[in-house]
Length: 440
Image (tube, rainbow, N blue to C red):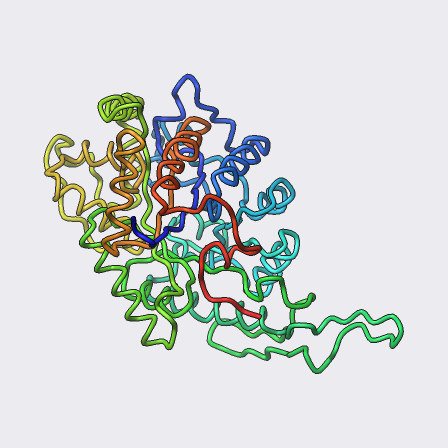
């Protein structure tokens, strides 16, 4: 039996699969139903997962086609969701051990406000919070923040790189033990252990410090996803956990090794940075039952919605100008997320899919599908782990509650039985769960 163990996070985002929410037993009201998020978090904690993770887009994701009058825009369930930062304090009160991670963009926030929010939630949760750093790619977001279009890809990452330096500098603006609250001496905090940041850069000018002492983890855990050159550099320099869309084991092993080598070049311990490919588990009692369930959910995706969902990653092409049953054309370079564009093209080429077939597959969610009985899914996860293709996985269920229940109550016990995932929490903080670098 291997001694290597994996990290596991649960990604709950309503509408990740654009058909599964239509299943009779699905609860689409999870989109803004706090009681359902609490239930999902408790299932994740019951399974001893490292964290529950939430995506965010500060706009209704709509392509130009939808804005011209397509009828399916309002049918896209990804349009409706909470600001995830509002979820974390509520879930912190409903759980004791589970890590709580939320996406917040460096493109349309200010570093002081973001650093303060995450430090606050780290206190509220007693050291269980994580920040997923992204650079927004949805053009509709830019139009909600006074812009007609996004900054260019390279400039977005340049801004994000300075952004994260300011955030971590603010988190470090108080030393451990700076806040004394000594009633006898009347000293509330030690001014020698409080530091002004005085940052002046290309994008930001920030005095600091934060309005609180050092948070329980020192620094909340930093998550990042990006496969482009600047994305990999940023992740290797700053991230504790790197999410990836890899679907091929050899390619994922190469991606992980690349991130580790870059991390070492930045003076970091490669073993303290974790690479987690995203997976969508589709579980059945047998492999055949799971495959039939997958096809049933896929059949619930409207054709027009599938094509529309693909449009933001088309590089400006209108797929309706092509034969939808013909091959996927070459996609131009785009100012949107490059990892999603590459994933679409690679999928279409690798499996010789038509435009419509690719759209339907992408509408199932952009993550690797693991379809089968619990033991079958666990076999693949174990193979990836033992072949150094990952350090664990970001599990992205198709829907709530069954998708979450199937993974936490069927697949995870299989992993625990094999000794490759914990049966009990052994640490206090999210950094303990993940085995990443600690900050005092």
